[in-house]
Amino acid sequence: MQQKMEVSLTAEAGGDTFIVTTSLGDMVALEEQFDIAVSDLQTKQKMGWMVFLAWHAASRVKKTSLDLDAFKAAVDTIEVSDPAGDDEGKDEEVRRTGLPG
Image (cartoon, rainbow, N blue to C red; front, side):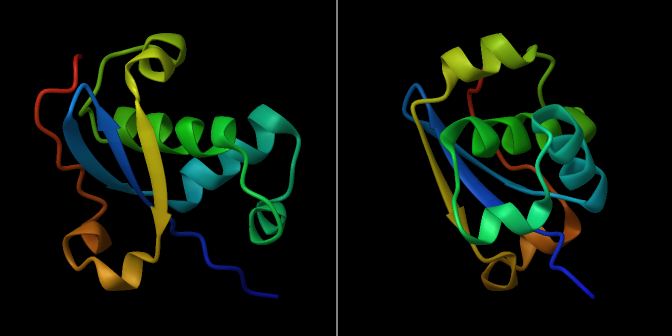
């Protein structure tokens, strides 16, 4: 059984936008944090899960120093997309402008 372990997330905070692509480690952290299986993302996507994934990926690549609660407070919107459509996201790069931390 093979599951896709990448999710691209686009988030806005204070009018600024950044994009993250998750890794296997981010997905494992999601499973451990919320006691869910990654396969649950195929049937439902809770906002808390998406914000956690965005925060974990951004923290992993040292693009935010905010803790999870501060990150949640800073994010205005979040959108899930297919990482195959974002070539830069394939490099697990975080692009952001102006997000605190």
